[in-house]
Image (cartoon, rainbow, N blue to C red):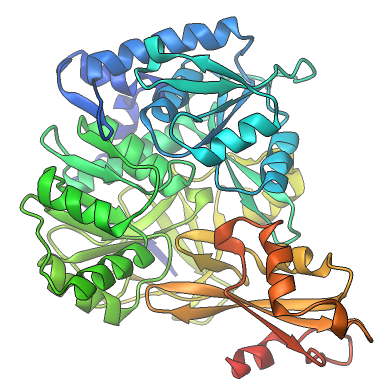
Length: 518
C-alpha cells in the first residue's frame, strides 16, 4: 500500500525546495534583511534581534575559522538550550562544517564515545548556562572563553584542537552537504551518527512552520533540547525560518512553563507527552486553571500519546493537542495533525506534504512503514552497513515501525518492530542498558523492556545474578552502577533481580514473558 500527502497549503513542493536557503547558517540573515529589529532569541534576561543574531553568527564563524575549523570538519557542541548554542550551530554551518549537537546531560562515557566516533575537530561547551556542560569542559581541560562580544551571553569553553581530524568532502548541493550529526544509539549499544543535510533540515523547518502558521508575532517556547532532532529542526530552525521568536529554556520545569504561558506571551508550546502530563499534575496539585492568554498551538511528539492524556490536556488547554510522528533519520517529521482538522483519536495525522509512504512486509492493512522524501537522511556516519540496512537503493527509509492508514488518510503507529523504548521523547535501546548492567561483576545476564505509563514509557530491567553473587549486589547497588554509565533518561525506573530469566532452548531470553510479569 502507498499513500501520499494531501494537497493544499504546500502543494508545490518543488517550488518550496527551490526557494529554500542553501545553508541553515543563513536563516538569521534571511529575516534580518527584512525585519532586522524583530526579536529572534530570548532568554531570561537577554534578547537578540535578528540583526544581532546574524552579526553574532558572522563574527563567530570568523572566530571558529581562526580556531582551526575547516569545511567538512565535525564541531561538537556539548550543550543545553541557550542563545550561545543557536549562534554556534549556525556559525558552524556557515563554515561548511558539521554541527555535532550533544546533550550535556549525557554521561561522560557517552560524550566520549560520540566525540571519538565523530572524530570531532573541535568541541565547544555552553558552560555559561549548563552545569553539566561545565563538568564535561573541565574533564576535557577545555579553556573558558569570554565570547560575550560575539554571542551576547557570557562564557563558552573551547576544547583542544584535534590535529588528527580529517575533513569530509563538501558539496555545493544542499541536498548532499551534511549540516548536522545527531547521534542515536543502535541495538548493539554503539553510537550511530545520523547525517542530516541542509535540505533535510530546511525542508522540515519550512514545512513544520508553515503547517503551524508561525509568523513574526509568535513566541515559541523552546524547551525541547536542540540536541534532539525534534527540538533542532521543528522548534529551533522552524521558528527562525518563519521569523518567530525562540524563548530558550535549558530544562523543563512545570512552574517555569506555566509562568511563561501566563506572563510572557507564549503562543506555541511543543513538548513530549511526559511534559504535558507533568504540567497537568502541577496544575492539579495547585488546584488552579491554566492561564495562557496568547497560547494558540499545542503539540505533542517524540513518543506515543495516549487517549487519556490527550483528553485531559485538551480540557486544560482549551485547544486541540496536536500530534505527530517522526524519527531522527527523517529529520524528524513524517506526519502530523493539521490545524484545521485536529484528530479526536491518537493518530499521528496525515503525511506532511512532499512525503510518500508504503507499508511493506505486512498484510493488506498493516505493515512496516517505509517513507521517502526530502526529509530522509544521508545515512549513518562511518557505517555503510547500517546505512544499507536502513535505506533501500531507491531511497526508501525503513522505519521499523508497524503502521496503518485509516479511511481519512491519518497514520496510526500500531507497534514497533524494533524493541525501542521512548522515554520522555528520547530513544532508549534495551541492548545499551543491558550492556551497562551486564558489566557489573555480579550480573550473569539482564533483559530490559519498556513499561507504558501515562504519556511516557519507563525502562524496566530484569537481572539474573551469577551463582553465589547475591551478597555482592542488590537492586540499589545495580541502580547506582547503571547511573554511573547511562544518561538519566536511560536509567531503569525499576530493577528486578530474578532467580532465572525465562529463556528458549536456544538460550534466547523470552521478553514477552517478562512483559507478562508487568
